[in-house]
Length: 179
Length: 394
Image (tube, rainbow over all chains, first blue to last red; front, side):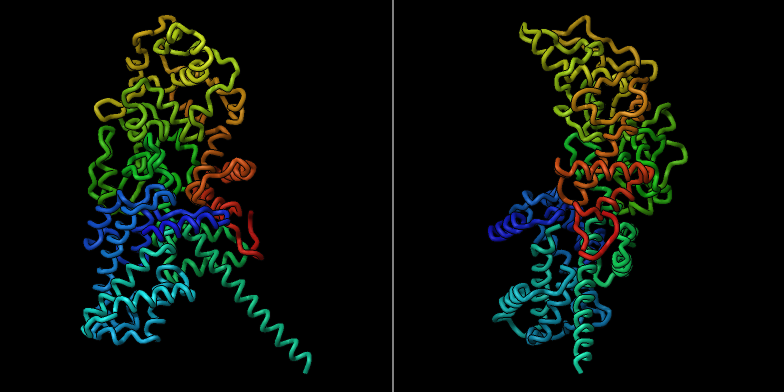
């Protein structure tokens, strides 16, 4: 948490462009999640979470509004969206999916070969960030996958857990929460 | 073979350059979309493709307008709501629930009406009857609260009422006669908040900024409830209170027939609310007694000359007052400043005043169109620098 706040402060201090950095506010953050996941804000799986955390999301989108309650709120909200996203995508043919187009939901974590990981990370980075991950970003997300699959069973349930964790990482990443 | 190598080098260099230029346009289009709508574009969106083509032709304004018309219409549900909501409460909080004043802002923007109607118009925007909402009322906000909670679409589901603003009130001055404005600024008090927040919200001038810097302000209109002899010292009134009340009370008459009572905006053309003529302890019997809605503008000198007043500086009633504010250069500049803060994520700096004035002039020339203003601000180099080599307006 402190690292994230420090990162945001450093990012803003070093930012020299005409537009000032800010955070997505209480309207923008859920709307952005809806856009990426194609889950409307009115969906019963996410609407209660939005209502619950709205007061903890930035009001004006100022960097100063970064706080622990804010981070906890976006973790909760992204969890709701990511859960529903996976539920939505699981039954679809791969080619029709919004995300996870190269994932087999009936197979365990052994499917996360380097090629599958690269394709998955590129796909999610394009969806959440609008660009492919650079080396550092890819390394960070690869590490997140490693930590999630370390020591787990071969059950297909663990595949879902990896995707939930990865989805949440992207949804709470600095690049996504910053406006 | 030398010329072949040179030719190939040029092709490769040009391709690299073109790819680099294409990538810059792509990144600019994505950022412009986010500036305009408040959210990033959907991956592989056709809107983004159209924007990139326009940006490549130097048509950045047109690209911004394409973003506004994106199928999700987030420009209305996010950007315009972020812009309008702070106008409807004392704290200028963007989280204020949807209300008639916010609907007015969205409707005027969507329909490309003259934004001066925000202070002069006899119009109301509301949800379509097919939505099954409670009817709009002077006495509650249920219609708009339910519009919001029902998830209705802020672009598609708002209609302009054929009956004007209120069927049972004989005055209309846009925002100044909405229920939301009355609730925030006419309830209790002495009706001075109505003037103070008109200045703050539509001229971007706080009390400290418009109170007289030193020039003599006539205190003919200063009301009886302002103590002229605080602690036995009349100099405090002369040196401080008068500089503010001289201006505020003189224009306060515009609000003389308006009030907010029992959760309703009310208009009493033949009566003055008692709060306008309070006589608290220490009251000054020779002070001004409000008997009608006459008002006079004394905010003319020193720093207040910058408001750029145009048209009559005295009149009767809230509508004429609204017209004076709306026709000032200060109004146009304030709309630019508010748009800049919303779109560019920061307030405009004092050093950018020339750019603000230029944008305000263009806003006026455009016919005071809010969508045009948002597009001009989003594509202004002070907000977001265009990629090198891409032309268009600065």
